[in-house]
Length: 194
Figure 1 (cartoon, one colour):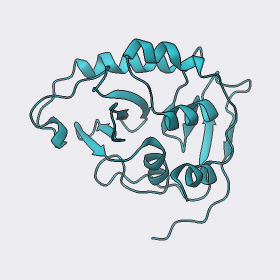
Figure 2 (cartoon, rainbow, N blue to C red):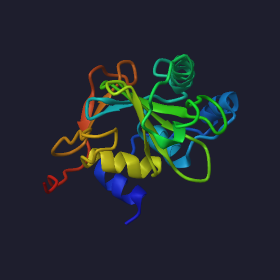
Figure 3 (cartoon, one colour):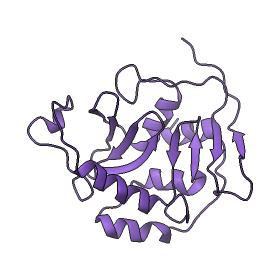
Figure 4 (cartoon, rainbow, N blue to C red):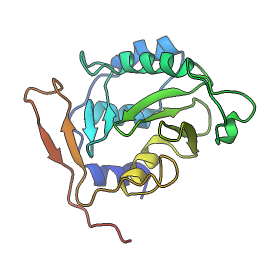
């Protein structure tokens, strides 16, 4: 089964479809195209919080605006001092953010993590973990990364599993829907084998 089908079975049907034009301005601003699988997820579910701690904004939303968030994160990470990163990609030079061949923020968490991709031929997700002050690389695309993360694998540094038994929970971010405090669940799933 493909990564997209496995993730779709885990999450359930997307709630909406948005126009691809919402991405044009952000992609022009950064000079990079976001991964199609990521855009499909954001267009189908965002803006949303998943399992209480992964936060996904959308480029067309007036409050939870992905463009504003991404550009703010780029500025924040450009200004950090990087010391002793364990990621081999940054052994000889510090990470760079916000342009072609640089790290581009995708989403964040309430656990002090920020998730990035780097444009290029090979799919890769990079995770900055604030508690470790380090960056970890995963050689997978967004869909595989999210599926494995939701299945409880360590996909945000060592000992980072965040498995929640039962169906995936979605929370509408405030002002992201007509109602406040809306939440729902994906399809039932068996608990993972330990």
